[in-house]
Image (cartoon, rainbow, N blue to C red):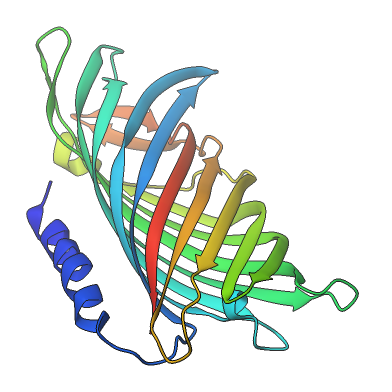
Length: 277
C-alpha cells in the first residue's frame, strides 16, 4: 500500500485530538471523529461468488452535527470523512484460477442529512440525506494458485446516493443519544478501470447497476459539567449494493473483449470516538 495516506491519517489521529484535549470551552455541534471500521466487499456472477475483500480501514472525519444537539427547528448534520485501508483479497483470475493478494483503499465521503421533526412525537424525526462516496481501489499483483503471475490494476469509483429513514433523539441527564436507520439508494454510479496497465489498449468506464441497501447509526455524547469539553462515540453500519453493469467492449492485441462490473456488495461496520469543540 502507498504509505503516505496512512502516515497522514495516523498523524491526524494522534495530533489533532491531543491539541484540543486541554480545552475547556463548551461543546458545540462541530465534531472531530477518529475510528476504525470492518470492511467487506464481494462480487458475484450467476449467484456464485467471484471474490471477497475483507479488512480494517482507518477513518477521520469532521461533522457539523445539529441532529445530536437538537437545538434547531430544522436540525441537520453535514459530515466529511476520509478513510484508508490495506485489505485482503481472496478471488480468482479471469481464467478462474484462485489468487490471493492485497488491495489498497483510499476514499472520501461527504454527506448532508436533514431532518423533519414530528410535532406529535418529540425527539422523532424523518431523515433525508444526500451524499457522495468516492474511492480508489488498487488491486496489487499476486501469484495464482497454479504459480502464474496475476497482475493487479486500479479502479476509481464515484457514487451519488440518497438516504431515507427515521431518527430518534433521547436524553438522559447530561447525556444525549441519537439513533438513525433506513434505506440507501445510489442515484448515480461511475467506475473507471485502468485496464491499459494490464495489456488492454484502453481504460474502460463502467456504470455499476443500482440497488437499495441499508444504513444505521447510533451516537452518544457524554455529559460533563458546564464549561468542560465533551467526548462522544458512534457505532454504525453502512453499505452499497450494485447490480451487474452494462458490458463495454475493449481490445487487446487485436482481439475484442467484453468487460463488465459484476454484481457487487459492500458492508461496513464501524466505531469512532468523537470530540465536540
